[in-house]
Length: 96
Image 1 (cartoon, rainbow, N blue to C red):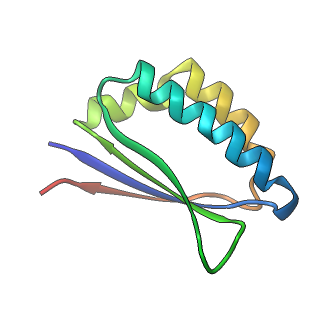
Image 2: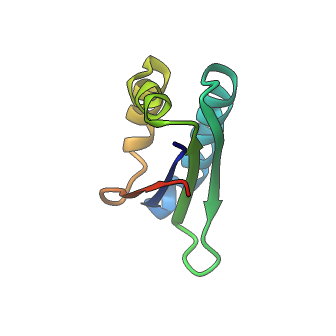
C-alpha cells in the first residue's frame, strides 16, 4: 500500500536560501538512490515565506523506512536542522 507524507517546516528567515539549496541536494539524492520513492518535492508557502511543505509518496512502508535510514538522508537532515525555526510537523497517510 502506498504511503504519503506531508511535512511542514518553519525555517529561520535568514536561512531560507541555504535551506532551499541543501534540500534540492536531498531531492536529487532521493530521486537517484531511492527507487521506492514516487514523489519528493519542496513547496514554499505563498502566505509565509519561511514556511515550506514537503510532499512525499512511497510505494510502501518499507520504502519509507529505507528513506529514513539512509546515510544521505541522515547527513543532509543534520545540515537542514540548523535552518529550522522549530520542530517539523509531519503527517503520514495511506493511499486509497
